[in-house]
Structure formats: C-alpha cells, structure tokens
Amino acid sequence: MKILSVLLLFISLNTFAQSYSEQIAKHRENYKEDFLKEKNSPLKKGDLQNLHFYDADSTYNVLADVEPLTNQKIFKMPTFSGASSDYLRYAFVTFNLKGQKQKLTLYKSVSLSSNPDYKDHLFLPFTDETNTKETYGGGRYIDLSTKEIVNNKIGIDFNKAYNPYCAYSDGYRCPVPPEENDLPLAIKAGEQLYTGKKKHR
Image (tube, rainbow, N blue to C red; front, side, top):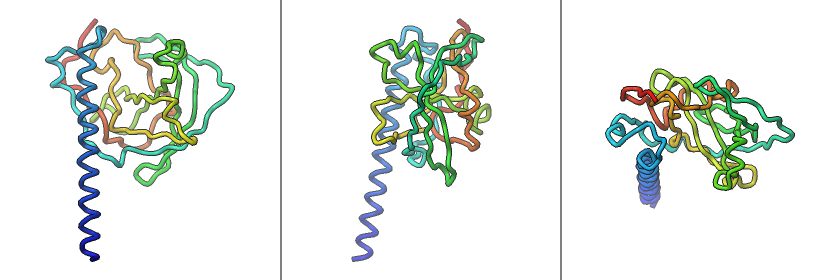
C-alpha cells in the first residue's frame, strides 16, 4: 500500500511538471506571436529564432505577500534612451526563493493607468546575477495586474520574465529597473540573451 501511495505521488508530481511546462510553452508561443502582431515591434518572423529561454522551472513560480504603499509621489523612472517616464511605487512584495527571503517593488505607470485597457497593470522590472552573462544586461520585466492580488498575496512567475525591446533594438524608451529591484541571486528562469544582431531605428 505504501509503495502504491509513493507511485501515485510520483505520477501526480510528474503530471504537474508536464502540464506546467506545457503552460509555459504556450505562454512563450503567444509571446512570440505578439511580436508579429505589434506594429512597433523590433522583431520580424525571421528574428524569432534568436529568442531563447530557460527551461520551465516551477520553483521560480512564487506566491508573494503584498504590502500596499500609500501617499506615494510620482517619480521619474529613467529609460535606456536617456528620457524618463512617470511611475508610482504601488506595493512591496516579499517571497522566499532558493531558501532566501526576497523583496521587490511593484510600480504603476502613470500614462498607462489613464488607459482603460491598462488601468490595472502592474510593472515589475528587476535585475539579477544572470545579467550580461546569460540574460540581457539591462534587466528583465514581468507584467502583473492589481486583479491578481487576493488577500494581500500575488503569484509571481519568473518563468514569464521577458526582455525589454531595448534588448533587440535601440530607439525605444525602456525603463531601467530601479536599484531597489536588484535581486542578489541568479534568476535562471524566463527569457535569456537575444542572439540576433541588434537593430537600429
């Protein structure tokens, strides 16, 4: 009976791993398709072969505690083009990853918040120890939503971390991840370095 229970647990975990990998694979296919649909995209169909990702790893899919921030002033988040964009610090998120407690800040774009389609959008830019070696040197982004916050908790899946357009081409206003969002560990999940030639707009 004990052997049967262990076998069933193994099958269950294996099924979860397969379904999670399939979910991430689907997410990445949609991600690639969006480049072809977006009129301001830096990539064409032939460029998509130069996109690379870490294997899906559910240990990088974490549940974080959310601490909303109040009375925040609008600040200028620098971009790689030298300009800046207006943002608000929305909340702190804390979570455990690789046995360590981590803390990041969620932001809201002032301009996007005025657009009904993006009024709930939350922006999570971050840097980590893979930057310049295995991932884009300027850091990566994760998109979240205020609707995903339930009982002051939110899921953050680093397998969905993606590169800013500036990783592929100049001429874009990509926010520079604030120093407070520099993680002191290697996030081996999500998008890796682009291997195509950088373009010019």
